[in-house]
Image 1 (cartoon, one colour):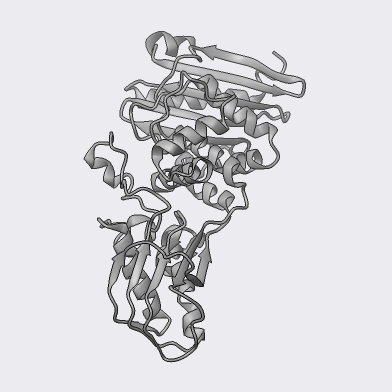
Image 2 (cartoon, rainbow, N blue to C red):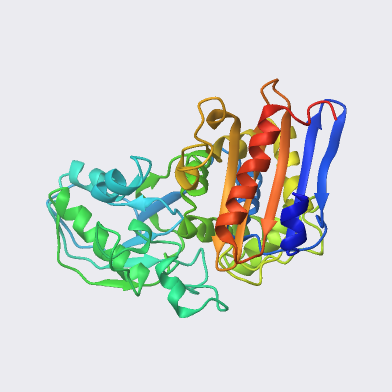
Length: 388
């Protein structure tokens, strides 16, 4: 590491051995200097969400009618209100099977109770309510090209903001697109819809017609972290803001993360978004390791976080830590944006000694950075520092 850091001073490293009687620092190179974390920011976002909601939480998307009861029959003429619950996994069956490994929220479930009641035609409007979040589709400081990295955000979005069942074109107005996909879900269930699709608010006293629930949050983070899914991260940030501070905004989400992780994420860190795409994000390696230490010590949210991190050969670690003796002992999140390569996580040595680490390299030598990161983590796995 001495050779690397001498040539690449914009590096920060902090490694701690998690001993039974307390943490033992093993390596510290400028660990208190904030660096761009890139996608390791998602560790903070996931931690805050898991703390705020609990690992078993499910996000709910609801369908309402203005009043009860809705009686059975062939034709339904009332307005229906689609109320978003900030579910980043709401999707069509084909999208779920293709991109979410079966771990999505099937929008068709909203139509099933109506078809079971005998309805084959709906003439009333679909009003889409996205009021759980603000209507900011992206982080204001992001360049426009980032739309390819994270589709437009909304509290009610289907297929993660993609227009169709493939990850090609994206939607411009997510709530209207979601209403259109609900109409298609009605059609799949055998119900024709001829009314309008518009945006609005669900009226007070509305009657619940149907609902669908997401996979557990710990399953969502297990999709987000290995694949480094920016859309899920930004949605969870707004969810956390809505839950903790009553505001479904990115700013509230980062503020809530600070509040929940106050002992770990101090004032020297700058949190701009939930995904790590913004180049103004700045996190010290020591703060990231403290988050991982807190997770390691917590059997509830912390276990869910660590189990959600990629192992060797998975997700963004697809080509890293592949040795059979190593791949199941590394749990980590990588990060990359231009001029930045980072990795943070935990690794167990052959003797079962656990280390928490964060290696932040704000440097253009990306290949060398990754090779250096891999050597350091692999050395920890051998147990080289178990008795130091």
